[in-house]
Image 1: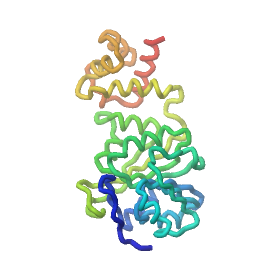
Image 2: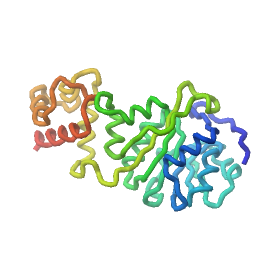
Image 3: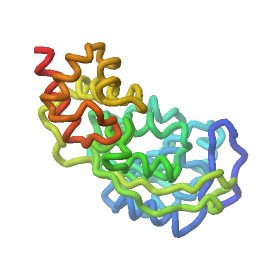
Image 4: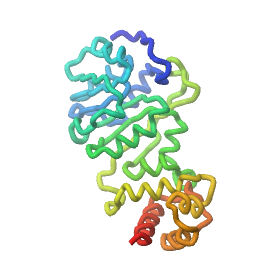
Length: 265
């Protein structure tokens, strides 16, 4: 396979990885086996694709860049490779077999929307290895004290770990920051099976709507409730009105969800 790197649209924020150790770490993190169908997002010149076709049953490579999508089958000639020229955010994940795995080296701007699409799809993945900015990977895996809408959204559906750190100089062209492999395993059983996810995330989004303010102020504004109503709701959830949203655990968000339902029934 030719490893010359193609000219691509700078606007897509693409940085290609050719480091053998890092590429192999992606496959290990995704737990790729010969029985798997793997969704590869943004295959680019195919350095990762080349390894995937040798290790998995089927690769569905979704590439937004038209030129790269056309070149990929020539760069990686393999019977078990299907190249789809499409924006991953509009790709039909239900077309994949149940329990598919995901590997992706994606630009920063795509991260939040992509993770939401993957997690919320009725046909969810089993394991994923996503190479993203180190800071964003850390945000996804954050614990109470540093939580965000992103960390709550992903951890609601998945167990999340920080895997291999990949320094900027291993990419072409080098990005301004280091990257890290984010490993995700979709929860075998829902964390909170009794939850209406739309209502749950309405509460969570309201809580993070004014990050620098207390949970009392954020929820009151975000849910259009009076301070008295919000204070009563927080009391039922056993949460102090003075805390900030980033300090709440998933269990506390679950408690708040039930307190909100009780208030609206």
